[in-house]
Structures are given as structure tokens and as C-alpha cells.
Amino acid sequence: MNEIKVFCPATIANLNCGFDVMGLCLEGIGDEMIFRKVPEKGIRITEITGADLPYETDKNVAGVAALALIKSANPDFGFEIEIHKKIKAGSGIGSSSASAAGAVYGINELLGRPFSKHELVAFAMKGEVIASGSEHADNVAPCLLGGFTLVRGYNPLDVIKIESPSEIYAVVLHPHIEVKTADSRAVLPSSIPLKTAITQWGNLGGLIAGLYSKDYELIGRSLQDVVAEPFRKSLIPNFDLVKNSALDNGALGAGISGAGPSVFALCKGQSSAERVAYAMSSSYLDTGIPFDIHLSKVNDEGTKTIDY
Amino acid sequence: MNEIKVFCPATIANLNCGFDVMGLCLEGIGDEMIFRKVPEKGIRITEITGADLPYETDKNVAGVAALALIKSANPDFGFEIEIHKKIKAGSGIGSSSASAAGAVYGINELLGRPFSKHELVAFAMKGEVIASGSEHADNVAPCLLGGFTLVRGYNPLDVIKIESPSEIYAVVLHPHIEVKTADSRAVLPSSIPLKTAITQWGNLGGLIAGLYSKDYELIGRSLQDVVAEPFRKSLIPNFDLVKNSALDNGALGAGISGAGPSVFALCKGQSSAERVAYAMSSSYLDTGIPFDIHLSKVNDEGTKTIDY
Image (tube, rainbow over all chains, first blue to last red; front, side, top):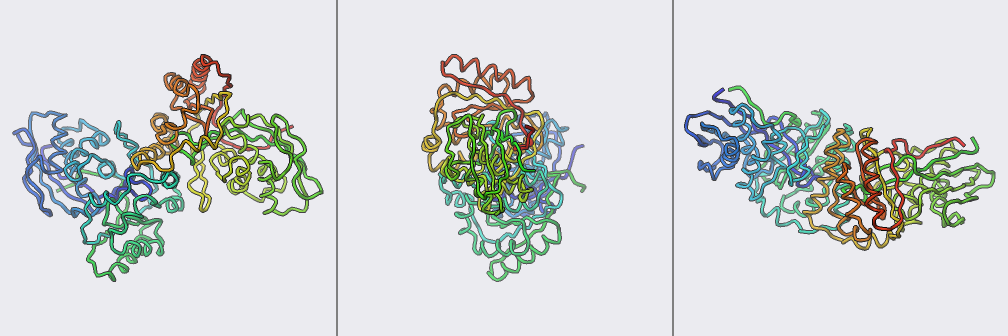
């Protein structure tokens, strides 16, 4: 195998009560990347479409993640990478993470899988530093592993795939405005009331229990965010409007995807998701802000090899 | 059925990362209570052994919980209650909660079970106010329901029983010193760093995932407390010594039971628990402080009717 094409999906991080630790993987929306073994050592990015990103390996998210992997695997050949972005940068559904995850997945496949997907998360995190200034796993973990993931902790890195029911669909509305991750971080307080923290971890416990026990009602009751949303929602015009339109039309829960500006809703079943998607779109049309909307089943597979 | 005898077990609240939300139910250690239907309406406490507690119904934890229940059920007869305490007051393993849970369980049985065990939690919480000044469910929930429980939230009350593996044993070492719950609350800060809160809820997520997936290693890695233990451990002489003796001898995790002073360890299997119990006892003997120690499987049944 000397050449493969890879699908690296979009992801929703945080999921309200799971701020900085939870994420889930989407189906149907994601980037494509092509990997080619070449005799010359190292990583070269040969083509980028769909986004204006640097070709210099050490300045590119995919390049840096790939370099971290080959530094560890040390093959006596090299790789060319093509990056075909479909996920918009800055949309809050893991655009940079898809590039980082795709890079380490593709190269690991061409190396004959020296690492498990779980092990690849640590390499992909190195790529995230280029995009966000810090190593974090809440998007790269679900992108690689699929489904719902929990980052239990970082010292050492401990990523857990959470068993989940099969009928969860996500709707994501992406308003075409820019919210810089740095700004989205800056609005958060450095300390929170202990009572607020207890409320948040009660809900996170409920979310995980609901996923394992396939209790959609419990999942819905748990999808609350008393930590980040109260501060971040002011960065997203008409956030309450679109969130409430989702909840009023049967969504299990709704909130900010990652650091925003995308707004997500989780639903039970496709027809519920379609109704919610329509309601969210209709409410947002009134704002006059351009947006796009995605409807996707939760993708249990994660990053994968696809046919040409 | 005009008279029953009830076993109301001891419980461990908090479980490190689950501060104020998690708890588990013990086997083998618990109070006994006797309930008798009588023609006169109301609740009378006719006998108390094992503790110096008030006989006035409205000043007694069991009495207040029982009153809350009959206020709702409104039977045209009354009840006599005998309370035989085995769990020492102030030990940190849910002594008052056992009385509150036992009271509502026993009366509900004699009424023909108008309420589910889940519904009884709210009545039992009323009794807790007498003991601790606030309505909380993290001990009464596991005492009634058995196993591991999560209090997702209070508005409205939402208690979830968490599926757990069968081979978890708890060891509890109770040093004979007094730690007042009020003092134990007072040492905690009212706010905590957001980073600390994230660490705690990552671990709580890991604990719940580990329980559902029967992953003992994950349960162990998750049993960390970065919120309460750093402040509370100074109230318990030689806490680090006894905790480390548990961890060094194979415990999955160890920490403060409830508000202390009891120290608990969770273990996989009985022989591991026996080794840990021996190690904890040996280390604490050196301190010269009297103590007792309990070894118990997790009790999946909770409060129950027993034979005379």
C-alpha cells in the first residue's frame, strides 16, 4: 500500500456539561486527505484545496502532527500529503483537528499501523498547538476514535470511548461570523463557584450514565452548561433564539459547539433531527446572518480510509 | 402486614471525584429499625438503642423524614418506630442518612408501597436537614437504592443508579475522632479554579464510564479528588499514611468518606480488600488513635426488610 485517501470527520467538542473533556464525531461532513509514500524522508504538503493554509510542514497543523508521528516511528522513507478541506476554519466543529487526526491516521496506515488509534491521539495533539496554542484532545479524540469520547485527563493522556445509543443525530448551525478561540477563552472566568462546578459535574455524570444506559431522556436532562455558555453565548448573535428553537422542537439538548460560533443540537432519530434542523434554520434566517447547517448521525467509526 | 424490621445500610458519599453527587451502599454495616402500625395517627419513636438521640419526632432525623412521608400519604392510622443504631454518629458513613432512609422505607412498606424507592429519596432528604442543616441526597440515595448512585441535580431532584461491576469491595477505617460536618464544609473554598474543576469532572466522567464498562483500572485512575481532599485531609490525622497504605497494597483508589473522618478504599475482589484492610489497620495502629474498620462488598439492594 503506497497511497491512500482518508476521510477525517468534523467533531463537536464540549457538549455543554463536558467542557474541555467531551466530544463527538460527525458523519457526512469532513475533510479528505491523500497520503503517498515517497523515497525521500520527511513530510511534504503537495496540495491544499478548500482553504488558504501554509504549505510549510512545520507551520501546518497536519504537517506538525505528521512530523510528531514520524519522529517516533522513524521510517526510512517519507510522505506526501494532499489536504482537501471541506470543514471551514473557525467554524467550531474541529477543522484543525480533522487535519491533525487525518495526518496521523494516514501515515500510520502507510506505516502498517505501528500505533493504535488511541495512541495516535497524542501525536495529533501536537498539530493542535499550531491552531490553538495548546495541546488538547477534545476534538482529535472523537475525530480519530469516532462516537463519543471523554478525555479523563492529560497526565498521562487518558482518552475513553463512551458507549452510546445508535439513534443520536446532531444538527449543527454554523453562522458565518468569526469567533476567535482566544476571545472565546478570554471571556471565561479563571475560577468558578464550587456550587456551579458541582452542578456541571452532576450533569456530566448524568450524560455519561445516559449514554451507557441508552436513556435519551437522561441525556437530554444532562445537556446543560452552567460554566461556559453563560459567558460565551454573547459572542454568538441570536444564540438563545436558535437554541430555544431546537429545544422547542424536540431536541434532547442544544448548546455551543466547541468554542463556537456553531450551535449544535442533539436529537433522537433522524426525523426529529430534520424537524430541529428546519426550526433552527427558520429561526436563524430572520437574523439576516448567512449560515450553513449540517445534519448528521453520530459517526461511530471516526477517521477512516476511503475509496478514490 | 402490621410490623416489619428494616436494615438500613451505611454509605460512602463523594467517592473522591464525585464530591456532593456520588455515593455507594455498604453491606454488613447498618442500623436496624422496627415499624409498627398503630391506630393513633402520627409518628412515635418508642425505643432508641446504640445512640443518644431525641425521642421527639420533630427533632429526630427518622421522625422528620417519616413525618414528611405521612404528610404526603395521609394515612388514617399511625406508626411506632424503634431505632437500633449500629452506625456511629459522626463517622462519615451516613449514620443520619440510614435513619432517614430506613424511616421512609419502613413506613412506605407498611402503607403498601405508594412510593418507589426513587421517590422516597425526596422524603428522606427532609430528615437530613435535622442532621446537617441542608437537604442533600448523596447518602440517602445510595442507602435506599443500593449500589452506586449519582445525584445529577436537585431542581428537580434527579437520582440515577449507576450500573457497576460485581467485584467491588470497600474498606472503611473510622478513626475515633470528631470532625464536625460544619468544620468540614468551612475548610472548602467557595470558588475553585476552572482548571481544577475540569480535572475533577474529567475524573467523574471516567469513574462513571469505568463503572458501566466494568473497567476496574479506569475506576482506579478516576478515583482522585483535587477539590475537597487537599483541604479536608488536614482534619484527619495521618490521612496520607492510611491512604497510601491502601494504594500501596493494591486498592483501586482511596479517599475521605463523606465529610470524614472515615477513610475509604475501593478494591477489586475480597482478597484484595482483606489485604488492604490489614495494611490500613496496621498503618493506623502506629498512630495510637483508636479506630474501627469495616470490609464490605458493595450492597446492590439498599434498604430492605429483614427477618426478626
